[in-house]
Amino acid sequence: MDWGAVVVAAGRGTRMGAADNKPYLKLAGRAVLAHTLEAFERCSSVSSIVLVVTSGERKRASEIVENEGFGKVKMIVPGGAERQDSVYAGLAVLDTEGVLVHDAARPLVTSAQIEACCMAAEAHGSSALAVQVKDTIKVSDGNGFIVATPERRTLWSVQTPQAFLRLELMQAHRQAQEEGASATDDAMLLERLGRKVAIVEGNYANIKITTPEDLPIAELLLARRQGEGVRE
Ligand SMILES: Nc1ccn([C@@H]2O[C@H](COP(=O)(O)OP(=O)(O)OP(=O)(O)O)[C@@H](O)[C@H]2O)c(=O)n1
Ligand SMILES: C[C@](O)(CO)[C@H](O)COP(=O)(O)O
Image (cartoon, rainbow, N blue to C red; front, side, top):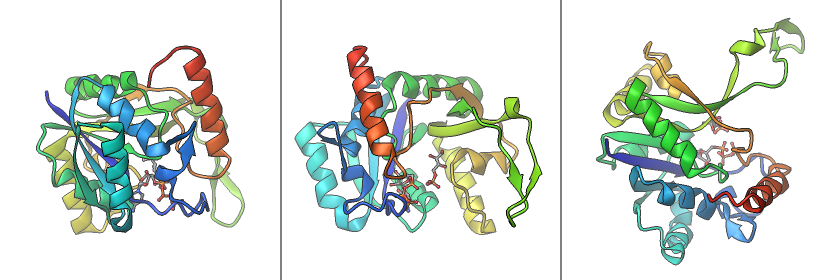
């Protein structure tokens, strides 16, 4: 199966509160986006990448692509107001049978994890990288009180990449748009249609750079990986 990737980098980085947007912050001397794209470049199953950016950041994104020689990046397109809109903008210009959706803000993803998601989706239709929850999770009543404790062994913290048949994911996006449903990840759009998404067990290092403490943590994780001789 041929695989394309939609890498979404069109967020605002509100929770990071940095002067620069997250994909362009420096991680071990390179843009976060460069680390992310490198993992997809190295993955032999992936033939093309669509990069989704905010309109004002197109030039700097394309400079990273050109300077780093990321030849699989075929298009750079503008994103939308929500992550869901940005993913759809990327899906609309791809033509591969399979699609991986990935957050630019997860620079510690590895080619092996991307490959594992492709394999699981080829076997089961769709897949998502995830790790088992370590904390005990509580459900609140919205007023500061706990109302329930879900069974922890059933809980997974989902990451990206997530892998799908492109036309099926596009259809799920369209249906969600028509019904006004919003989702914080793509698996959720298939779940609401009753489709099964296979879990691919990842690792805790594939963090999403979200708040300021995440960047030094990512630096440490990257240094440890480089010390172990693992490639991106
Ligand atoms: N309208 C949006 C919102 C998010 N994203 C992307 O989706 C990924 C995950 O989103 P998140 O970490 O929440 O990023 P931001 O939206 O930038 O952060 P925040 O919510 O703190 O503003 C990021 O790679 C981000 O660039 C996007 O492409 N388009
Ligand atoms: C898709 C995701 O990375 C899975 O953990 C996450 O849901 C994105 O979340 P955000 O709402 O954009 O922060």
